[in-house]
Length: 157
Image 1 (cartoon, rainbow, N blue to C red):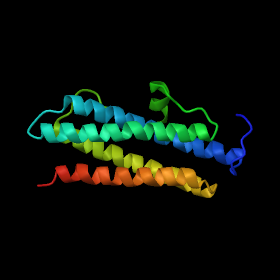
Image 2 (image 1 turned 90 degrees about the vertical axis):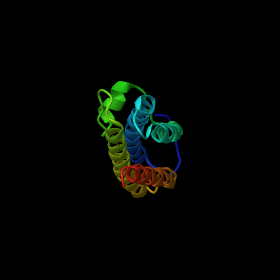
Image 3 (image 1 turned 135 degrees about the vertical axis):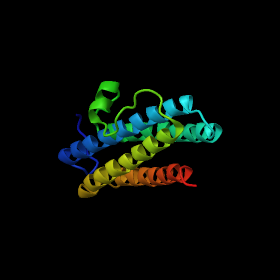
């Protein structure tokens, strides 16, 4: 780490960055899962889900960049390999191609997990009065909550 003076001590920056690394890993895992499902979805809701998944993975692509850049702003290296993401993520990889209904359920759970990770990081950011991270994480929570709601709504009659 280099000398950095942004009003957050080194301990705080390291703790915040560790939380953000988990958020990055969860977000990237969810991005890959969503992109995979976009490619492989079939069934009666194909067009609707194909387009919805595309909107979601496109949004997540921007999100992972924002989170990684926040980690770098705190002067900590951002994880960027499958090995690191696998170690840090709370979202399990999916093998094979699930049904479209299972895809929606898995993505709903994935977004709900990201929300929980956001809440953990938000507490750390607030502890160290890091409004920039708190704002980023809070904004991510809103998006993931809305996305989870939209996914749940597709399974209702």
